[in-house]
Image (cartoon, rainbow, N blue to C red; front, side, top):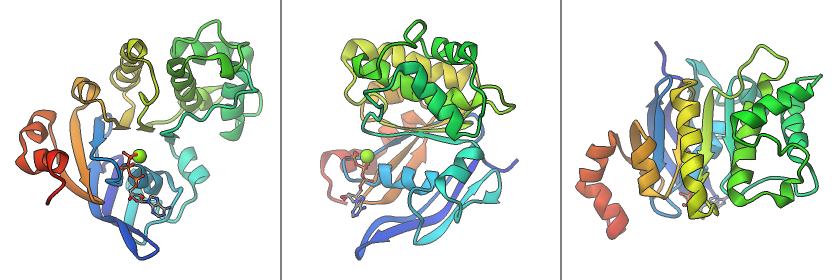
Length: 246
Ligand SMILES: Nc1ncnc2c1ncn2[C@@H]1O[C@H](COP(=O)(O)OP(=O)(O)OP(=O)(O)O)[C@@H](O)[C@H]1O
Ligand SMILES: [Mg+2]
């Protein structure tokens, strides 16, 4: 079976700087792969190449065996890639329910039923919050709303929402007491629903609690991709974090 995602020697240079250099990586159906690495390692840039926000200057991106390197983000999203951003991206003047409707409409769903919206909100543990303004949500609840938007395309259609979720630091800005529930939600989207997840995360306790496999980025290169235990024991990985001298 072809991997859900195959990156083949993918590179991205901008203004003469090599930001991503020849990264090759296969992501298997249903796995949760954490992407870690120091600040500036290229984690977000890698997500941009997968979601289509930027085009690689070398190499290819395959989704379910099909070359999607030339496809724009909305075409990739219709093939099942969903993405959240490092900075929370909710609209403060819109309600929680309106966000889910917006996500469903931009995925091509014409009629968005109130019951469907409620169902998606209940799924992310935001039941009863549909009429609230997104501006009034805690950081943790905003992050849940962003996940709800990835599930929204289920509404009224045959699709099930994003099959491959790219989550860029979903715990960023979230209060310590809210991270447990958010971690449980991500685990359940992965384990109970079989979604494939790529997760950029700095909190190592979250990474070790969730990941089937860990990929380590450093200076735009993939240093290692292995089990959490193997990666933690790897001397070059430790050096990447401690010394930055490789
Ligand atoms: N559009 C761009 N133009 C020029 N340089 C860029 C651009 N986007 C990213 N970079 C540079 O590429 C490198 C990798 O950035 P990136 O945001 O991918 O890192 P990151 O691993 O996500 O870091 P963080 O943990 O801080 O989020 C950084 O040095 C950054 O300054
Ligand atoms: Mg980043």
